[in-house]
Amino acid sequence: MKARVLGAIAGGLVLATAMPAQAERDTERFTSLTVFGDSLVDAGNIFTATGGAIPSAANGYFNGRFTNGYDYTDLLSIELFGAPTVASLQGGTNFAFGAARASNTNPQVPDFGEQLGLYAGYLAAGNEVDRNGLYILNFGGNDLFNAPDDPADADIFIRQAAQDYAAGVQALNDIGVRNVLLTGFPVAGPLGFSAEGYLTQELAALSLTADTTFLRYSYFDFFDRVLTDPGALGLPTQRLDITCQAAGPAAIANGCDGIFSFDGIHFSAPIHEALARDIDSQFNVLGSVPEPTTWAMMILGFFMTGTAIRRRQKIRVSYS
Image 1 (cartoon, rainbow, N blue to C red):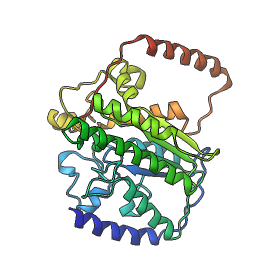
Image 2 (cartoon, rainbow, N blue to C red):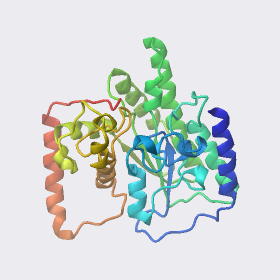
Image 3 (cartoon, helix red, strand yellow):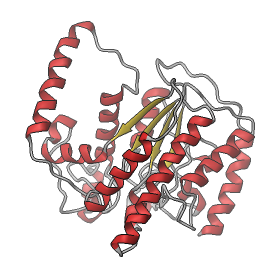
Image 4 (tube, rainbow, N blue to C red):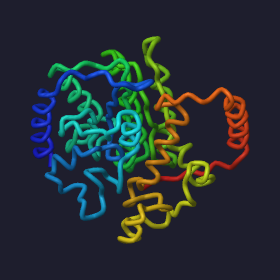
């Protein structure tokens, strides 16, 4: 697997070399989208590296993604630029690989630091950092899945993951990246909560430039709302007791509507759609500007939502 991935990366760098410098795009806020991460946002790097074997379309996976449709970064890209993200091994700027970790501890695929190295190769090929581009970072799940069984060792492991995750943000800032959206650790439970705490500490210690916009998205909060108020996210009540794959061809043909997980690890396509909507709602990624008459209603809505969140019992969920 490692040799196959490395060989595909070498081919991908050749493709990147042939690409022109990143062009300005006609959008209101961002002019490009660059992605680093794991299987939740892999647009086809593992698919390319394995010759189309993983993830297999025969099992319901869509176009090299680890779900049954476009992931949330694809959906944001489609809204911004009219096309989904493109895997770096296919000449694009989505450097995410399935099974990647925030810490550089997976010997099989490029983790965050190694993905930054691939991006450095992309820049060395004549491309430029897009200071008006959005850079999405989506790591953490595989660090938690692969933490040692011993509690003390696990704590050291996730602390290192948090440090490496934050260090990647600093590294991007230092080469001129000015818009970063980072998702937190996506697996609930004591270890996940500890990892989030460590990440908060590490991010607070960064020295970002004054003109850097840093956006942090909470999966834990999103999962809470998926369970307690799915309608507010445009979702029906979600089934957590079955995966879309296990539900069979009819469920897949129905788009996995109402089923949270596609395969027991990855979100179904409707959840990715809700994610894209929620991220835009929180951070205005798409650059939409509300009409003046809606500002009062929005302010009231924010107040009521905050009050409801403070009052309700928190429920946590793991997508594993």
